[in-house]
Image 1: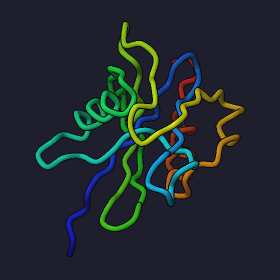
Image 2: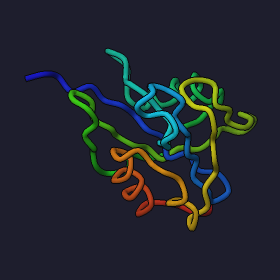
Image 3: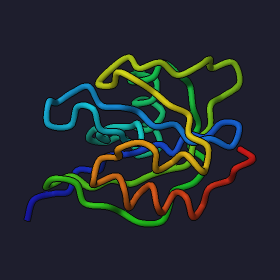
Length: 135
């Protein structure tokens, strides 16, 4: 059996809105939206991977708050786990630095206005159940 590779996603919240990131690569995913994040490296804790990925992809310093219950399959052998997260004070605004070409802060009524990647849809739904709109 192939070992699962964990991909962490951030349900990054600010002012009651959720951050969505539009993929610019690879071509088969370009133009679709996802929760930002990336692969956990060998020996790395998922929470540490989340902080690292947000720094690399968005240029921000964030902190994981809590894991969203569930795990969602991506293409084998990858699985997605999501944490709610918040920007640390003084972190600045996220910018699409790597693998993304646009970011949007979505209010609760706007979450489904973007074309989420199919594999992110159940994770976004689970996130909405735990959403703190005051964050």
